[in-house]
Length: 304
Image (cartoon, rainbow, N blue to C red):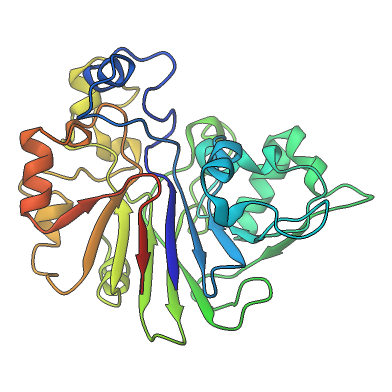
């Protein structure tokens, strides 16, 4: 299975349009130590021809342009994108569905809860299910494996992840086990497993059990400390954990919690633009690398 990073930053990307933090300012000034980043998504393939996206953000048009594997190949209208799997209803994970609204030959997979709130709360998304060319949107239950569109080699098992309802839904919906999922993606040919958890508020026993099955882990790296955005005065909640994400650093951060998982290739994704580890010369980035972790970037590829 091939894994391709389309976007590595959290919502807003790097630089974020209205942010003047150190990282955003450095990108605008051409600092070679801080590279631009798109909003988060992975693409996976078992043959290098047909691709399946894990979440789809507003940068998808540019991400397709930047990656020849995703270009049209045959005839006047074509896409190698066969399906899109959604892990929650965050704007930075779903907005690309509207970008790819023309002649939709792909299939969307999500929990019933995600489909319900996306269509109920965002009128414009209803174009995806309206005739004459409605998209195929398949609901999956938790903890039951499925194979994505036209693929019998990549087996995907969704599992519940402690998190929270997206901010724009909090006034109308209670949290739900189907609101945020991780994906256990097993390649039947290689016998290897990718575990994808782009958002996690707590490390439940189930989450740890899934991580222990991984050969490669992509996981939430939103902030380095629990009060990173709060210290800058730009957060709507008192800590990163309350916002629905677990910090990277600290005595009980992700790196500390998973320090004994030395046989897993561990990669951070969904990094907020304020995260100091996005400056590759920073002490935080050095700490991440020295701890056996990687920081994902656009165009990063992994074969398992």
